Every structure is written in C-alpha cells, then in structure tokens.
Length: 132
Image 1 (cartoon, rainbow, N blue to C red):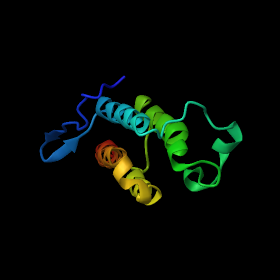
Image 2 (cartoon, one colour; image 1 turned 135 degrees about the horizontal axis):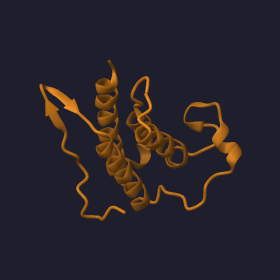
Image 3 (tube, rainbow, N blue to C red; image 1 turned 90 degrees about the horizontal axis):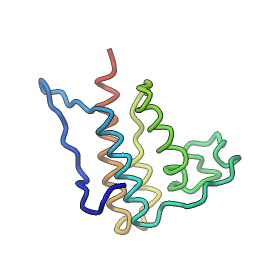
Image 4 (cartoon, one colour; image 1 turned 30 degrees about the vertical axis):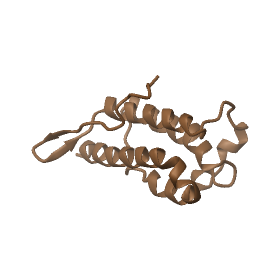
C-alpha cells in the first residue's frame, strides 16, 4: 500500500531519445492512482451490481459514476493488460474525461487528475514502444 510520502512521479528511462516505460512503472502509477482516489474519497468499498458493469456506453456512463468506472472497470482491465503483456491498440486518454467530469471539483481532485495525466503519458510511451 502506498504511503503518503510515496513519490508521485516516476522517472522515465530515456534511451536514444525514446522514453521507455516498463510494466513495473505502469503498475506503480496505477497503485498511486488508487491511493489518491481513496484519499479524496473517490473509492467505493462496495462494487456496483454486475449488470452495471456490462454497459455498452463509453465509460459505462449510463450505469456508473466516472470514479466507479475508474475503480471497477479501467484499473482492473489496464492492470490485466499490463501484467499479461497484452497489446493495446492505442493508449487511452482518461485524464481529459476526468477533467470534464470533475470540472466543478478540480481543486479537490487535482492530484487524481494529475496522476491520470502521468498515467496517460506513460501508456502512450508504452504503446509506442510495443509497436513493431
């Protein structure tokens, strides 16, 4: 479990002008996101009903709050992709959606949004380096 003193920015390995991001870095960033969500009370102790997770809408917008989607859909799926070294066709851009959803709470959730921006950047680099 991350501590409050945990560094919230990860150094990148730069080789030949290319930013290299490994799986460990991504998993740490996801853990940090979870920790920050808990700090600002965006983390639920109860999962949503199973049928709410089966939505066909982007971000399960018709059945879940955005923070529920992050916790119960995005974090588990992206963790699975990383741990099993599966291919992402493109990096998701989650921070933009978070800024829109939390526009009236930006001060309260700014660290969560910043962590999502870091994760987005890392995923872009990770996807790019996985391409042949």
